[in-house]
Length: 299
Image (tube, rainbow, N blue to C red):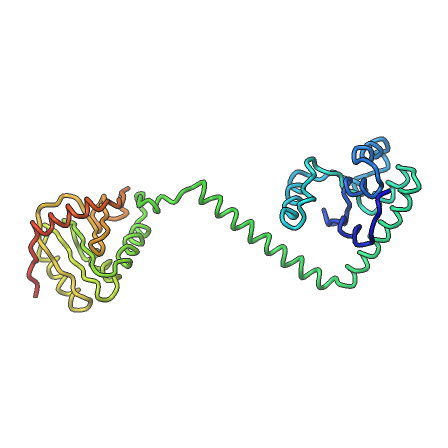
């Protein structure tokens, strides 16, 4: 029979499963000095002696969860490939009568003593163990929530991360462009032929001392009045006239350029997209602005 160096060896083979402390067929076979298949065959031949409260096979989720607990702390536990059978204290006692060997009887006594002493330890430390269980439950719950969130992010990509917005996503679209405006450190240029006070409101979100310029061909009296009123309360917005642009653009710090599929004032009313363009496009647009625009005089 294999030598057992002490009670602690048996303690390490006892697990908590389905609200009970159990031992696995492989560990019991090691203690009884028999093959696992021989132990399980003996149980099958006497299955009427092993009801579910004596012996049961781990379910697939239980088996996967059990294995995951030992990935780092004890790699030898990972040797199990099939779902093992678990034996309760009563099941272990019954095993000694089924195997019918003197070594089995002796080792069963040690195992039963281990169960008894473990219960004694648990009873004397029930409050501490209850707190630990609660912490583990909270941790497990949090881990599952995080897994669900990550799984959802992987399966359902956020289209807004790509600058695509569906009809009705008005708040999301405004939030997106507001974040872009906040990211500017030196300057913001908006090229859009349909400007109103909603665009001016977005520009109030820029950092202090960030210069703001609007380029448009649709400059009417109302827009001029709105900008004058805005400039009396907020950092100045400079207005420029140009008739060379059909599309809408947002330029940040003269480094980054976005092509906008709709006028900024209409964001979210229909499906549209923001597209970040390359440096060559940025240079061409800045060159066209310099060549075709004129600053509009404001009081």
